Image (cartoon, rainbow, N blue to C red):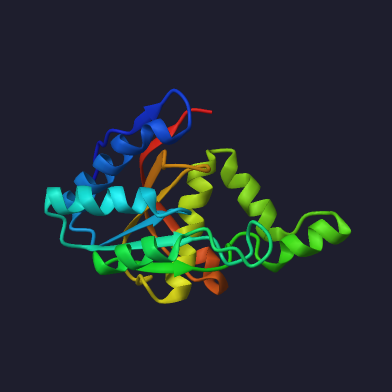
Length: 193
């Protein structure tokens, strides 16, 4: 079977693409009856926009929000304000606050001793496609490790750099300990580098 699909390409990465990415993700989720959308969101703003748009579009699936672990930016700081987290959970979203799947403890060793770890090499390889592509894969793994999404069906994952999202992919997620089971099925939208 051959299927022809359209990929949306942005001239530049960044939060200005968020609205189009959310629309592309929701449209494809409804077309393929994809039950889970995973979104990277440090402040919760992008997740809130996705939740509001999903409600307007009648999307019945589950939205999973992945955010930084405590202390990512130093000290014990948490990037997702507790009030925003409570709002997202009240909207029916699952919030995953966890360690980055493609760095984790290896980042500490690199910072102390130099060199690169295998997870960081994998992350850097995905960045050759786009930062958002790397983030989308990473949050899908984090969500699977948390038990928020299954590894037995396709999900849509959204990522970007800093604010907003600029990349959406359909993938079959995996856990960190079964990384080679991860399958990227479709690229819905992404920036040109």
